[in-house]
Length: 541
Image 1 (cartoon, rainbow, N blue to C red):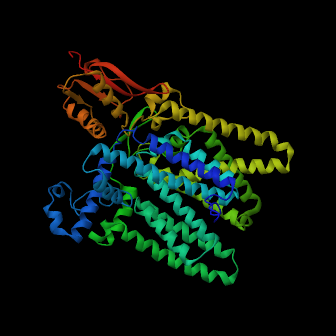
Image 2: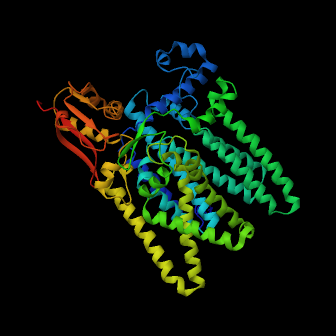
Image 3: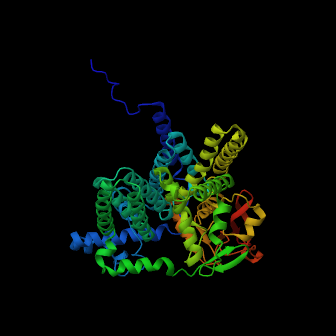
């Protein structure tokens, strides 16, 4: 009788532990993905995917597309203002929605949130591989994944943020394929890295930074390799560059429909994005084009668990100390070159934003792709202290204290994720609730409108309920109704303030309360003492 157990999926206890971690993570996603509302950008992002899907369908079967009544509701790619946003995620999702959801908006947004989370898991896996590679231990790699998952804002946004979280995941995957390429340069790995780079570019055009990073790292690698290996690195760099550009064009139908110069035009939009909104920052309502240089660093600090930030600063500080002592010799080892890559990944985008002042808004979400680098440097800080303590016993109290602080931060973050569910997107790490309430943007994604609508539907048995939300969040009552059951959606009517039975607000752009004339406040949603949504009932109702 053959040994049925000779073939093993897991060859060691470490693989059981790591496999169990990712199994639990996916199970949590399956359990919780139905709990979140619909964020500000999701309908338009989905429309972008539909626009590209329509364009591809017109190339294959134009008569069939013209005969579909719904095709008239989807703009042509040449006329859609946001067609220059990549569709590496939105286009496959549009096809999946066509197959599985059959026009049911609730089914679609549930599918969407699950897909966003699964891409997030892919990014977590890439981070694990990076940590395992750099620190030569699955345990340290798993610590990094734990820090990422136990980051309250990222945990929530992993279910609905199809731009920034998806870009972060693909960017992290591309960094991992880059590390594999640097460690063992082959044409096959160059092709894989080219594909990973294209995935990132085809979500956000800023992913073109990966081309520069890759070529610089290959050059640095060549300087520390034997002469007979440098030719291979040069050929691998050429294969990678061609593959990345080809895959980028293949995955971005917008570039098929318009001239090649549009890629340059899309790149220029990084610093000239026409966003006319405002943000609340230290109690002031500021245009997104006039933010101070410290906007991004402050948002990183106040929304990231403080022990993670401190550990990352220790990691950066230790790297700078190593550079000052050893100079160029600090990158003579592969681990040293990885440290340079991780530090550059974290600091260069932040410094560029501080210097060039492109349009950013809604916290630091446009730079979420640097967060895995912060995590890796946090692990680096703890790892270095632990290694030092093994060699110098007098450092043991410091290493133990650091481990306890990070562990305590993870436990506290886990507790906040559970307690604040499903509104972890409004997490603040160090701000008192009263200060956060009036000085910073809160639920700018607008997900809490779902729970506000559910409350009104549950507590008002009228067959029709008129609802309203003031500018600039007026569309969010409708947007969040799309994830409700059809029977509940049928009861809602969207109207103006004068005719509304209920007015819902997430206090967007507001640093003070609404006047009594808006109605009587009958329900609030608070997260850690911060009011993120209010439901007002008309006084005569």
